[in-house]
Length: 248
Image (cartoon, rainbow, N blue to C red; front, top):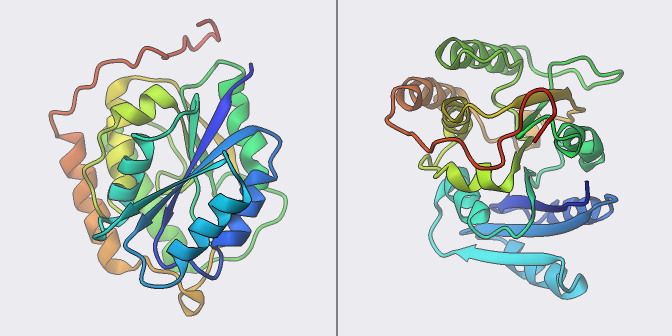
């Protein structure tokens, strides 16, 4: 399957890592479009985005929010501006490794999946040891989300989610905080599309290294699980839905 991959990267004060992550994304062996959505950065991120676009003509799209809309707002803007067949979400902080793209795309390339989640909790050969409460908080939120959606995910909160483009555009993301992950999971479950999970590597930061999510975000995510699973969202089945047997 020949396809174009759109990588959407929300950007908010990412001057330290932005150039490196974009370079690592563009080094992957796919036809790639990078969609950078700046969400009101106060540092040099916008300047760096312009430099990257000039250095890689035709490969980078830059979009700017004058007012901060949160991760959900940045993703919604990015999803509505992609030109690829498949959309992948990439954070700019180097916690997630673009070398995992091949694994993430394999189920879609094989035409057996519409959506792929990259799980930090499925077995990988080597991984960094992470904070106890952060890890088990993610597991608890995933469990609660699964109870509402009737999905059996191991990592609902993962950044690495890959969508056929029609699925991404149909999500109509409303959340403006880290509640975006429960929201998109609830909406995907309502679509009835085919979902796969694959193990990924994860190099998570601790709070001394600049990690932004905290206890408040966990309560916001908990409310989002309830809210979006009981919402009236009904997009129908996107036209790209695949048959679980692998037939289109």
